[in-house]
Length: 444
Image (cartoon, rainbow, N blue to C red):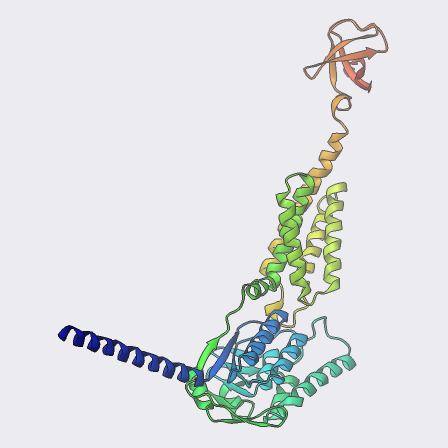
């Protein structure tokens, strides 16, 4: 009887524990389901096609998962106009409210980044950051005054088209484009270019809870961000690879390295590895450069450099053609990318050493190849013309001669005694033509 009671008590205790655990699980699931989620995307790079693709993915993910908001932590020196327009457009049409936060201290939203900041539903900055300097920089050199005015007016109109709808200061925003005006976080807040400042994202989210915002279409929406869980979007392997490739310095090194490996394959056919690796590097470089604005004049300089290096190796210009080729190569690599900001340009400390090394090595290797091809025509009997020989037996008119330690069949135009010094004057296939070596006449 006592044993049965103990069993019943134990079973009741286990059931109670399971019930409590089940109830706690349901409560936790309910709390988790009610907790708002803020998707976070860190844009700490230039504005270009790769970062535009990353932002598109972040917005699509936030919209698909029904996030309460998308938080973009921004730190950029700017970038390409077309990519900026694509990114700003994606922010403007996002169903999920977009919060752009220039952070941490020392970060900036310069040039194209300023356009993105103003496009956000909520624009915020951390103390010690700055934004602005959004004057249009032309990628392919400054055009005439009319075209310059058209491009600048177009950029200003694009900015005005949404700054006013966000309830921000249009004049202060346009000044950042017209005169490259830049603002600190405090100045931007004072001039109503941003909505608030915050020291970190936690305080920013807390400050935005319950805030009413006006969407681009004029509708009102209240942000419910209390105790929001911030979920960071990590870049994919593909995005990391593209971000690495879009660096113009990496693209240049891949291009030069691939060209050298392909040249090595042509000179030593059958090795396969240099040719395959070189082809892969060239394709990666072309893919990366295709994402960047390229100057065609720079491409012409690179082609001219190759031509000059080949002419130097083939005809010998006493180094003049090689120097001119290296100069063209350096100028071509320095100006290859029409960069609106320094971060998208090829660095001089990369372009100059690479150009000098590539030009010197290329000229040297081509010269060796040209010499080798010239020597190929002077193998066997061809190579012996002009050499000295010695008659191993009387030539009447044929016999055997010794040339450079080799025994050859030879024919002479007259009777030649054994041991007579001779000179090879020609050949018919493998039969050498020899003549007595005439000693130089001594001058009195």
